[in-house]
Image (tube, rainbow, N blue to C red):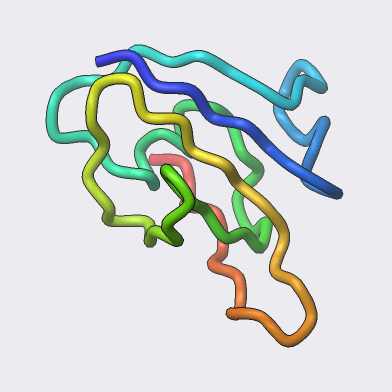
Length: 87
C-alpha cells in the first residue's frame, strides 16, 4: 500500500535526507509505528500523529492512500509518544 508521512513544525527536516515529506510503500496490515520506522523518524523523538484530522496512536492500522501528519506535542495538549525503535 502507498502512504505519505509528513513532518510538521519543529519535526520538519528530521528525516534522514532532511525532508519533511516521504512517500512509502508498505505491506498490508502496517501501522503508524511501522510507517515512522520506515520513514526514518529518529528513535526517541516525541510525536503525535493524525490521519484525516483524527489523532492516532502507534498501533493504528493504515489504509491505502493515508497521509500521516506527525507533529510535536503542544503545551497543554496530549503528551507525545516516543518514536518507535528500529528493529
